[in-house]
Image 1 (cartoon, rainbow, N blue to C red):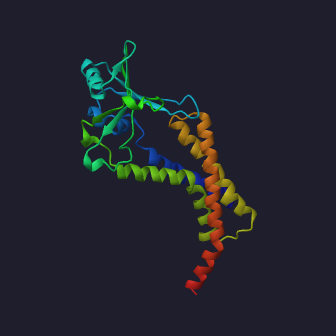
Image 2 (spheres, one colour):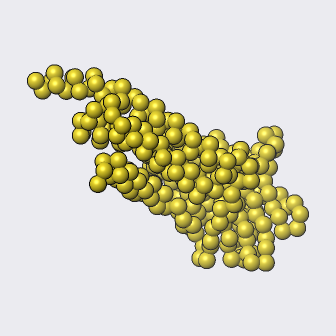
Image 3 (cartoon, one colour):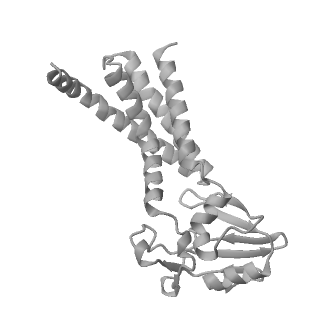
Amino acid sequence: MKPSNLYAIILTLTYALLFWLGNSDHNTASGWNKEVAPWLGELPAGVESETVRAKTADGYPCTYYLIPHNEEMKQKIISTFQLIEGKPGYYFSEGITPLYPEDKEVDLKTFETIYPILEVEQRGLRFCPNDANTQGNPSAVKFIDIPYPQYLPDSATEMQRSLMLAVLCYMFPGVFCCVGWLWIQKKPIRSRETLIICLAIPAAVAFVGAFADFYIHGFHRNYAVFSAVFSVVTNLISAGIVIALTAPVKYLWRTIWK
């Protein structure tokens, strides 16, 4: 098998595995536990979730939870988030800033304003914990204590996961191929195979991987394309840095182990 084909297969499989590990908790229960449980408690039976794709390139996707109709849950959502009734069956907020316990004040989301929405339909309650596309009124924002702080996610774990996915998207393909080909296999820089393995293959995997990531998570197609192109650029830069460091690193290695 040609080295270029081998690297294309290995990189694709490795990228796919890390992508799956970083998004393996992308489901209804996990989403509820992160976004809703600190406000409403444990996940009720029969709840399903759906992602509404962003309508524009500068918009945000929204997650809705479909809750079997329950008057008690309806009133709990309205009172907890202090929602305002708009048209019949539609409740909204002009903005809520969560007040975190002292041990959670360093969390990155401490000062985030959220805009929950509740729609009462025949099939049940359709609840969005945060419509990030809402343009709120800063003077109307309410500060509300989180009722169930014990359900707050661990900020360190979330940060590590986000960092892993960022590195995977914007650096991993370029660094992976260059290190494997130039440093581990010690192949020459000036060759056609180096251009393919260190630049072309990482660029292709970075584009497809980033596009899939953002599109799967509900972002607009144009935003996903932009993010994919940006991923290609950052991976090429990362690959260029590794290529530039190859000669001095090899020289230091030979000097140290002489």
